[in-house]
Length: 329
Image (tube, rainbow, N blue to C red; front, side, top):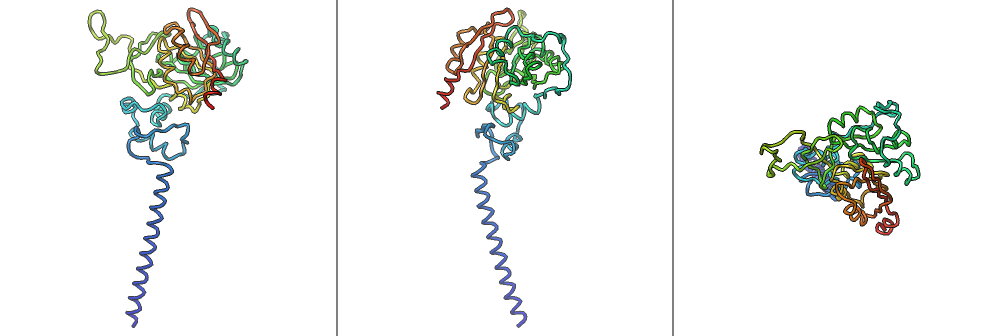
C-alpha cells in the first residue's frame, strides 16, 4: 500500500514539474518576441540596418552592440558606413576626439595681446548674431588654433565653445599646445557622406586633400615619372555630420569652412534637415561665389556679406528662418 501511494505521489509531482516548465518556457518565448519587436535585432550585418543616433539613446542596448560589431577603421572605410552609423561615431570618440582644455588652464598663445586674429570673420558673424555669448562654433581649417583663427576671439572673449578640425598634423600639435577650450580633431572632412581615407598634401595653411586612396588608381608622378610621396600623408576623413554627432551637438551658431577648394563638396555631404546651422563663413576663391550661392540657396541660406581680403575671401551665409519654417512645417 505504501509503495502504491509513493508511486502515485511521484507521478503527480512529475506532472506538476512538467506543467511549471512548460509555463516558464511559454513566458520566455512571449518576452523574447516582445523584446525583438521593440528593439529590433542586434546581430547580423549592421550595414544593412539604418539607425539615426539622434533617435537612439546611448543606453539603448543596440548602441553598444552595433558599435562593437566588427568596428574597425578598415571596415568603416571599405563598407562606406553611413555617417550616423554607431561604428563611425564611436571611432571618432575613441580614436580622434580631443577634449577641451580645462577652463582654469591658461591659454598658451604666441600673441596673447591680439584679441582677434581673424581678418574680419569673427566681427562680421558676431555682429550678425547680436554679439551672442556662449555660442557654439565649428572651425574646419583651424591651423594652429591661433594664427588667422576665426573663432579664438569668440572663445576667449564671448565664452563660446566648439570644435576645431585641422588635418595638418604639425599644425594640430601646435593647436593642442594652445590649450583651446574646444574639442579638437586631427582629421580632414570627408568629401563623401561616409568616412574615407585620402592622400593629403602637407602645406601648412594651404594643405589639402588630393584624392581618395584607391589601389586601382595610379599614384601621381613627378617630372621623372617616379611616384611622388613628398609632403604627402595618408589621412582619415569623416563627414562633418559624424563629428557633430560624436560630440552630441547638431545646433551650431557658426560654421567656418576653409579647406582649399573642397568647400562645395563638403557642404553637399551635410544633411541639412538634421542640423541647425545659423551662420557660415565659406572660402570661395577656389570654388567661385556662384556655385556656392546656387547650392546654399535651396538649402535655405542667403548671403548677407562678403570678406574680400587676400587671406580671407569668404562668403557669409545666414539661415533664412522663414524658409525653414515653411519647409520644415
